[in-house]
Image (cartoon, rainbow, N blue to C red; front, side):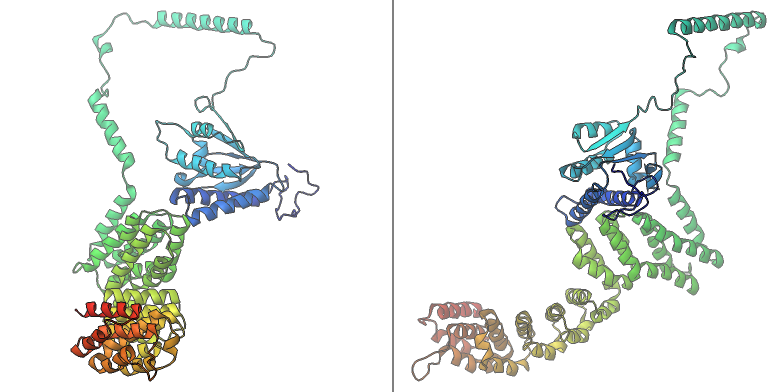
Length: 575
């Protein structure tokens, strides 16, 4: 370690040193990062950005440490890791404890050397992950570390069979021969004393009772039964038994005060379960509460309100955001099935954070679970979903609009019309998609305004929506667009969307304009551009009338191959 004139000062790299010249706080932070990187290693595959971010942060912290130390040596007991005399890591749960992972297999001291931040870092994390999965009868951590051949990670361990056994020391000046002679003399003296005691205490007769087994002796079958019952008791889920007892008492309506007391206990228990990753017991509590709420005569009005307050608190935005943060950060772990079962009991307040999470999560299976859960909650709380259409968060508002369209929430129509004037293009586009899904003509006037939107994608989507809705009053607006100059500079996709929308909304009234654009020649034989004529042909293909077909057939042998191809396409579509 580098010598320092004043260990209590702060170094140029920002590390604070204690009185012994050790950067305790920095190393404590490093082990927090190591724990997070280890959890990420277990939860995500190697290409996941969350895992890569934690490993990169850990590398950076090691690199900063090597500017002040030439090595990092820490020791450990069952639940703690120490730097010198200072505790830098502690864990209440041995399931996730780095200290216990090393300690249980005899490792008492580990040393990190410069270079560990290189390719050996991920190998070390892989070794620790493998050690967590080892079965008792298989290899131990020491074997896995030995096979990994790490050069920048060293460790010292003890023989667990010999640990704590003190060997007697010979006295000063004693040799092996004198010690052996002393032991033999002591053995002779003990044997002589035993012979004298036996001679004086020996009974004169032998009774048959001396050979009877004790009254409390157990045969092998009884011993096996006793062991089996003891094992069952050790493995019994005490928490589940306590919860069952609480719910048994909760089903007694004759004692309302005790019901309120139990509901208060459950209200504090569920957050405690979730903070420890206990989604299963939390789900069981919510399932039982729902059952009792639906049962007749169990709860009066006050107890019903107290029970619903528990679920409402869990469904609050802050609670769900904290839960999602813990899941994404690896602080708690749960399977997709466990999470999905838990979320189905939540209420409308959980929709906003869950919608945001379902749009941002990278894990494919988790995203599917979140979206399915969101749809289930929204189906039971449709007013809450409609209210989210006015959310300031553009991501939530657009996700709510798409969900309303997918679920066919017809009462969302007026709110979708308001969203067509939203500042964010993504929200306007989502509102148009939802309007198409809902066949909501209430948004048609907004769609007409959207035909002049500054965003090309929104103009195209609005035109297609008006066509899907077959909104006849929009024919005049679309006709003006077709006759105007801006449409001629638009790309082919926008032209086609506008012309087809016009054909669908105007029907027979639109044949004249589209026929003119497709087939008319100017005084000098000049026609409209190829793109305009092709789009006009597709617009005619959307009109189911003999006049439209006749106009298309007149251009069936047009010398322009693009026009001819789209005319034939329109004719096939009509058939």
